Length: 113
Length: 113
Image: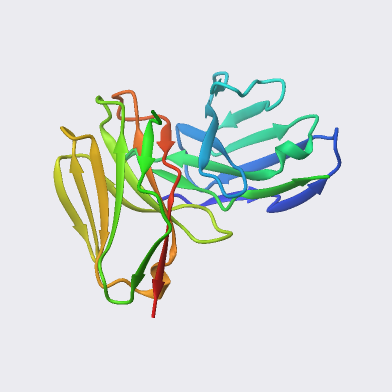
């Protein structure tokens, strides 16, 4: 498995602001994913981020709201833009290993006031 | 019909019993299936992956896959209070060996002493 870290672990933000979440992996991985887990809910994929190409967004998620960067094979960022209380959630980074298994980072707990 | 459905919970079993968690999926070409355990306030942890029909055992855990019935299950033998968590079934849809996972809604398991 891979060791994944996320920053920040949690944050409380004001409506209308933006937050950038960082995801760092201890080894090079091709595919990284960003998920959202709303309170009491399961995981929903936001986008897939491959190094050297534009992120692929799932239905209901757009780049203007959730811009993603993937500058290299060990790092990615997700920005939550122009936040509203509905964006309060846990945001999770995951990576796919050579065995095609996915492992998750510890998550970022976001509260928007 | 949801892409991945899990048996409704919560599920409560006594310590030492077998806990049975079930999952069905709609995409017939799915190739890869995973069980994650998520403790409250933590991120999902991969506990089992299964790719072929039949059973796969790992310690007290057994995953069972029946592609014809589009059904995957997880058995936990000799359940312990530490097994109390939400169990998430995940399916790699689309018939590829890489890429995004679709998660079920999760089943909350409580093992009582």
